[in-house]
Length: 113
Image 1 (cartoon, one colour):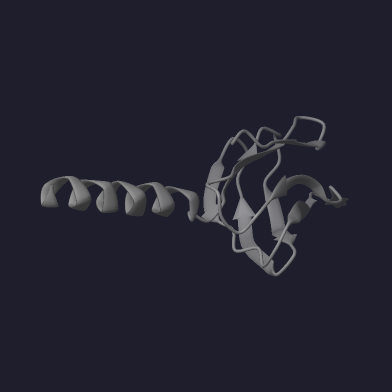
Image 2: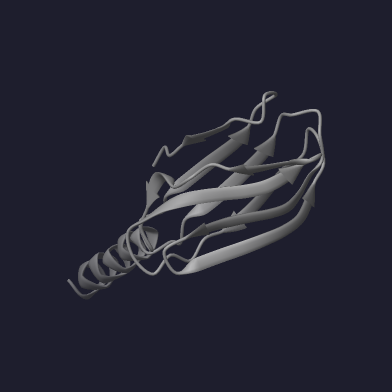
């Protein structure tokens, strides 16, 4: 009986911990240019990445303070790109966001949970 109660308590803690994970973002540069002055932002967070070479990938944890979209801004050569707010994340829930800068510098987002 005591072991059953302990097992249930541990199971609830593990299940709850899985729901409290901060969102993870993966940024992929599929363009032929190095991206500079890269900023990923949203409600309550702003993360700067100095440069992202062509073909590279960068992973980071987001820390939104509430429901949020994700915005990406960067320089590519002489062009300034602003994706506007896209997608959806919350502070918890294990969201995964993949931002991809395409060959034409367009930004696409996938938010599989």
